[in-house]
Image 1: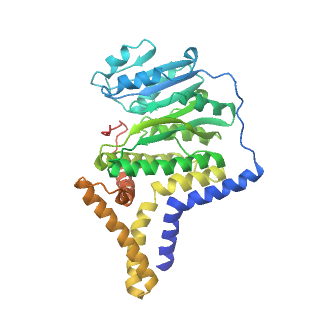
Image 2: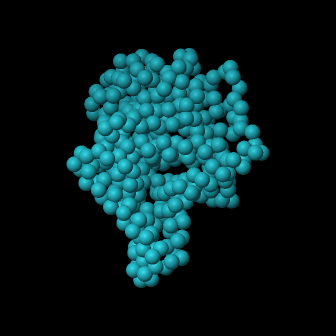
Image 3: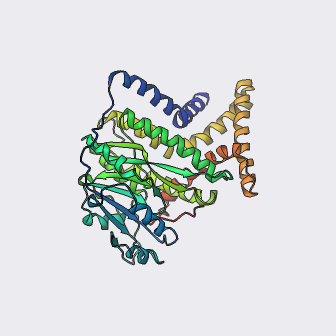
Length: 388
């Protein structure tokens, strides 16, 4: 029981903190022997297609279009495609007003992946950039993304996701903001070591020629599109100077809905990405993928429960002060989370309590997502989360 407890603790700490330290040390070692790839200034820019899949985004779509058309990229080298499949509001009509944009619309709502598949034959750019309808890009985002394609080993490039966190942030805003700052650091280190292990739909790009059709029932399409390219031996680069900005979920309930969907998609992707998990195919990439993604999306949330139960049994059975203190610290952490829940429900803002609360919500979402996936209750059609 003690051995099982310490294995659980090791894997939990490694998943959330330890992997970052290991990455940092491996990078220090790598930098002693390998020089980073240097970009050539003034090199011709590739042709680009920017693809936006929008569903009932009437409130934001005009602002998204203006942001898109203002991007700093040669107008003769960029194509804009917006798909609005299934939208029942004025989203298609608003897009239709702009002659610079190719609008693709059908009344049927078949999910984001189906909308993307339908757009592929219309793409003319050497590089395809995917971005969400509710995010806004910095002006040089495309220029910063495409420079990585100077390296022939790069097959996809992920941008950075930034959460706008106000001073009066609640748990969803503060927790999500903190999470993405840490996640962005890990992505940067992943790429510096070898490759990223996925991409977020807010902003990522691929070499168009490397696109592989992904199953239409895919839940997290962005991750799967990028990972299928990585499975072919290409690198997923990461560029923090190309970023997509969005507000946090309206509240924890909305954030939980989003996280459960991602968790269901995570377990689906793990079952389908067999090459990525095969160390004989690419051992470094497999190490990164399992450390950064698989552990979080599979066993770690269950290990948190197991470690708590085992710690309690060991502490009371043996009477060992060390295990009693450890159990007391665990109880204290979860009490902070419960207090965070209480304050969140009463609109009381104490940021110190948001991180333990958000951490627990995030791990609960993984368990709920796995259950939902195996019960076949998760649709591929994306569910809009209310945002601030």
